[in-house]
Length: 195
Image (cartoon, rainbow, N blue to C red; front, top):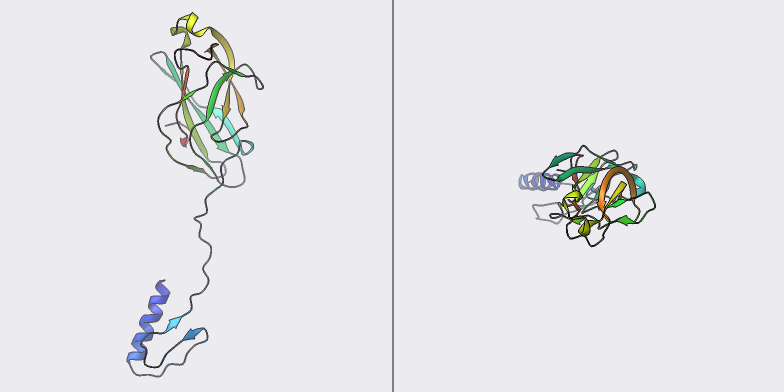
């Protein structure tokens, strides 16, 4: 756009001086006009293209360091883009306790906590994470929970139907209708800390 204004200003100045101008190819001119119209050269595509959604096969996942407070353990689930190009994660992962890579969930899945923080674009090798809060189910009356040992977690990246299984020993409520939420999950954010 700036080159067009510069061309127009130059044309107005030169025309105003009374010198005769030849019309270059690709331009139009009218007698008595102080402004030359120059056709605009083609523009290169902009980089405003939206990256595709991250798919499970292009991601690696792991667990970050735990912190504990008042009967709850918090840890981030870390997603790393192993694809060749950028991709986007947005929203909440699906998380549940599991007894193995192909097992059904044990107890109720994680409940979403808070609001989505918007899309997170991951360059190749980039990371995003979501913070999980796991309560100590031994604080729930056994008849309302039916505690059971579990060796891991089943994790679905946001808006994906293929899951990961990660080993993480814990205790879950065996009842799917437990009276207390055993897992809470925050939305994905940029970086590996979950915060």
